Picture 1 (cartoon, rainbow, N blue to C red):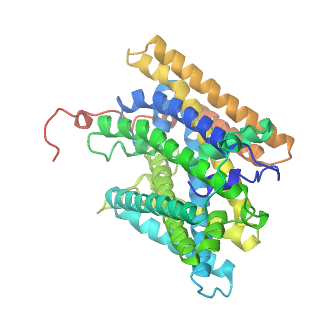
Picture 2 (cartoon, one colour; picture 1 turned 45 degrees about the vertical axis):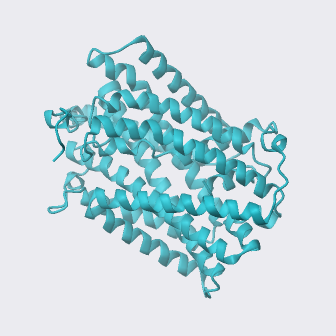
Picture 3 (cartoon, rainbow, N blue to C red; picture 1 turned 180 degrees about the horizontal axis):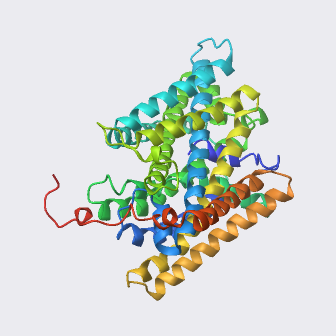
Length: 449
């Protein structure tokens, strides 16, 4: 709500005016609702530990599932990296607004990232209930802080609201495609409850409900936040709009204390996002380890907490190293965030395309396919593919390497799937077996013990 609209607003990708914020988030919201409608029927019939990876295995087969799984892991990992970078950036800004001297911002940022990664790791290993409640608490507090501070800001700084400007289309079709991909990164992870089907109570009720309502409610919040930020930042100076913490800088003009409170809320929110992303990533990796298509060690659970602790401990150092490297290299945080979010969104979009296309095949496999499922799956896949293709061609045209990096990941996944098919067919055949629905997954109407 605070960081991603501000990244789109200055048009970081092209160094020019960004596209219309409300339109961008409106399109992203519509696309995510289509994806949710495709995932819901599968979530109502299968309690999976690895979400989209297992859905794709049941719909389009094991080899395609490998690509979907790699793409999802890539997306979750990049967004988790961006989240830790945002935590470090905003905690340092918090110190500055409170007047706490920061001798070396890079060192402090690195230390904050390490502390956040360690704390997140502890919460995730300790149990999904603890990490989920921590995430919910921090996100609720952050949303409340942002809502109150925006009301206070506009009360003291009466904006010149021109709805014609807020909803105006500036004609930048090239930047719009990239902006939609970045905006989609604000929604990605809404499907992460599908990776908790094996740990949730009443998974065939709670998981579909979560993935249906999350993009709708989040989309409403994003549209309100995008409208407010469009109004607040439109007349702001270039020093603020080009800053790595534009809203914080904007609030500090009114009150550094307000800005510090906002920084705390934003940092807490991104910490929660890091936990959610790594939780989902680790469970896909864990499932792959169980099936033998990833190192079997990552398929082990904690002896006491029964969480995928090995997978969590394996991925967390990688997730932490990348934002630390960005900070040490001297790259600007806002450019680092933009690149990480965009790359992560590519990963999510790729997995969404395959999972959405799996819907009719998944239902046909169990004798429940309908014409509506074929139409929905085809339409959603085509829309997602069009967004991904347009953004990719635009990115390549500007000389950006993001599309090539993601393309390399996809190619590697295809080659690995072919290797499994030829050399280790039994392992490939095991993909999706771990997530077979059991009698204990079903809800019979009795009390939950």
